[in-house]
Length: 218
Length: 252
Image (cartoon, rainbow over all chains, first blue to last red; front, side, top):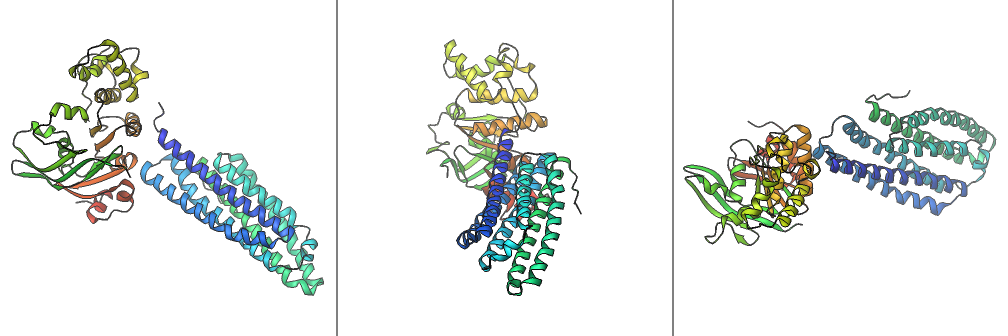
């Protein structure tokens, strides 16, 4: 007889909800990147509207965590798991916000030339998407090694962002008419870079959840 | 929302001059766990013992008001108290198995109620022990003395003994206060199983336990029910300052 069957089931339910929220924000980024490539304004509007779903999931998980803290009085790894869940939903919610921010900029951008002129935005989006996916996977499956890998990938994003800035500066210099759109792209790149930072935050909480040590990277 | 299983209406109880319960009117929900909390002497155990008329056994007790089990007034003159106590079973603070075998402990109640056939008794013993999550631990030694079991096992045996007479309601008076934490967890886990078929009312000194296991919680103070609400509301957002002070440990 396992002593806390009910509690274990509750923790599993919490994990399922986190996976659902993670999948939802992941889809939001995927779709916003696709909308950027395809200049799909309708899809961009859909992403903005769907951000409400992420907010709602955050509220539900927050309530679930507070109820578990109140009713189950978790200790040790259970306490760390629930308190870190409370922290990472904030990061996931921000990731969702940034996907919507990107979608808003896509609606503004009417000139496709800038996208073609920037070689680094696509690889940047690819790395960012895997970071978000893997960070949530690492948390829900307790995979510390994967969390460390995600944290290391942040350097790739930072380097791509630096290269992209140089590229966009060149666009602004050479094509005066598209200067505003180049700035929009700079914003998109900054949001992507922030999304990667939130993925790193999630991974730092994975470390805390597993080891009790919260190490903040740079 | 579950229907009401037990309802008290303006229940007052006096031990001589001591007014121990004051105008208690609560509705206990069916197939839910209700915790009664409050400081020592607040009336919570008295309230529990009133529900199956165990207080009848105490001299100089006077009761006014009503207690209904379903639609039946438990103080009605026609009520068969033995039958009432089989419908409303009780588990006490210290495990109190009878000094007889594990099997006979469980078969005791059914035998009193006229069941003699071995096959039928075997079936009741097995299902009751399974219902109390102790069958696997004792099935090979049913003839051994019940007192040879550990404290936690004895308490689950007592729960099985209660289950053997098929009660509708199970009252528990601090059922884990004499047990170690692991045995306590087992009983708590068992309680969440029990509520599938039974209404459970538990007196507990541990507010953490009330928060863990119960669906509803009543806070008693000086014989009065100060607050009665869902456990979540009562512990997360109590409405009465006295409740807040008690559960946050700022009492007195």
